[in-house]
Image (tube, rainbow, N blue to C red; front, side, top):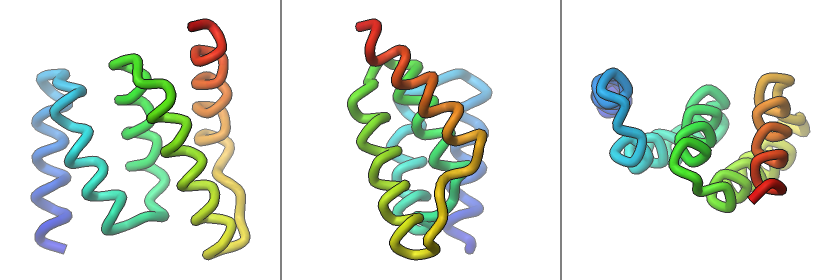
Length: 94
């Protein structure tokens, strides 16, 4: 829990200075610890979108969806699916 608290603070500070590239490794670590944390997933996908790494964002969504279905038998939330649709639109435009 202490480690996650430090990650949360670090991510918050980096978000405040809008350093998307620097946040990604910390968000990935958080998602490794809490693979079903949809809020962190959306943050990570959004960061990938901001820096133009659409393929990485798609892989992240697909990995999350697979884990969520295997572990809980659920689909992503409407917010996450909306982000995915936005991502697909951007991906198809490139």
